[in-house]
Image 1 (cartoon, one colour):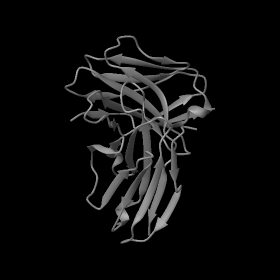
Image 2 (image 1 turned 120 degrees about the vertical axis):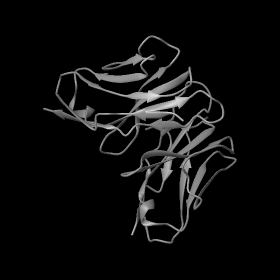
Image 3 (image 1 turned 180 degrees about the horizontal axis):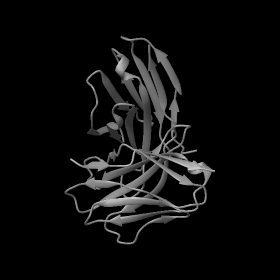
Image 4 (image 1 turned 135 degrees about the vertical axis):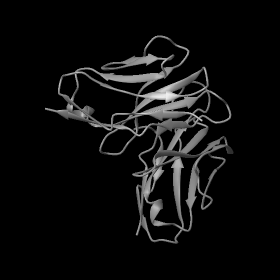
Length: 113
Length: 116
């Protein structure tokens, strides 16, 4: 158990819809990262938050947004969903500084029908 | 931008034997971190081993060890005494030390099969 909790584990929805993925980081970790794993794009970094503030942005679509709340949990919002958004979405957390690695949650599998 | 290359899409090893997975990377930075993550069929991402670039000594974690060649920008993973539970997808990853964002940049992965 990595200590990172992601909900839901599976999500099935239709094109054009909006979904919210939730992540609770490990106790004490201030940084939260979101990654997308798809067959054609591999594992790609989407966005990072550190202590409530956006720290880095990767290949995140404008239809996607995220935030980190005062209790440090994070949500990734995906809107106007397309078939190509079907993927495994991982959340990871770390203390945010130093050598400590990122620990990953079990992921949310999103299927767009 | 940093890139990570895993040139072996698939590898196979006999149980109890040793296998080496290759990884090369490109960066202009002098200090950084490198990681190997394992993704079994359950799809979890499990940290296997990590290496700090300024440390010349190769990291070791039980049956897992790395061969870190900084000048060649190579970071291979050696698995000794392979076990059936080692069958998984293995990802090599790079992480900067900059405070402006320490995302992981992943390679495309190597799928390891273990033959009984």
